[in-house]
Length: 322
Ligand code: SF4
Image (cartoon, rainbow, N blue to C red):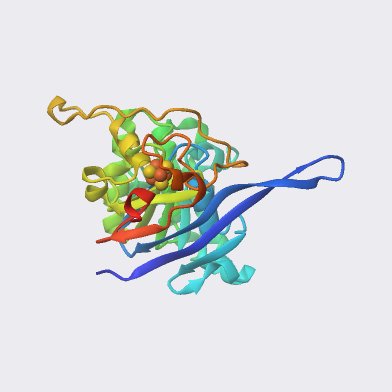
């Protein structure tokens, strides 16, 4: 079994809700509410859920782009949550992010060469000539050409810009890439190209991925294991095939039933999730899904279900807490 690269224990992020003239705290949004998981070296962990479920906040917490309210994040046994600024700067060589909208993260006034060289300058890597060579090599790796180096972000298509976003993340030769909805803004045909590219470079650069998406269909083909989030909580996590074939949580079952299946023999009846997603500022008591769950029992309304594990398949639901 490969060793662990990342361990997350009891991670929480509560955003205060302030109002009034003096900005007094009126409550809090539990964007991430006590989640735990691990990532093994070389694997891809998919994290899936509706918008507002806390998956992107989780990605930002892991990079410490925002501070956690509580919990531990261990990267190669070093605790990210307690690192000094200089330690954090060093670890950001090892952990990089790919964003949904690469255009927003690419400075429009900088050439691609400047954009890709920047992480190397920030981390003091190489001479100018070495850096320029690395930029040109990296453009080839992501399926672009060295002549693209002098162009600007607006001269590229969405798919090409995501290739540049991936190249930028790869420049410091990271160990972990957190990809936050990297293909959601792209056409389906381009999505497949970017997913294939990510698979190829994973082998070549021995990368570990956390792949965040709202669509279970997209993460299936790239993930070794998949975790499902609902209202800030991780409600199920299992090996990819196990999750897709034998999902246990009623929410995961409903999400999966909505994923389009091309072969009619394998189509399942769509399970509709009734009602609106409750506000994370005022989540339901007990199981956060109880207001929309067809299998809801009395205990679900009052008691938060504990996570249980059955052969590496984690689920938090009272149906299995007997
Ligand atoms: Fe449904 Fe209860 Fe399970 Fe929540 S704990 S998903 S309400 S059965």
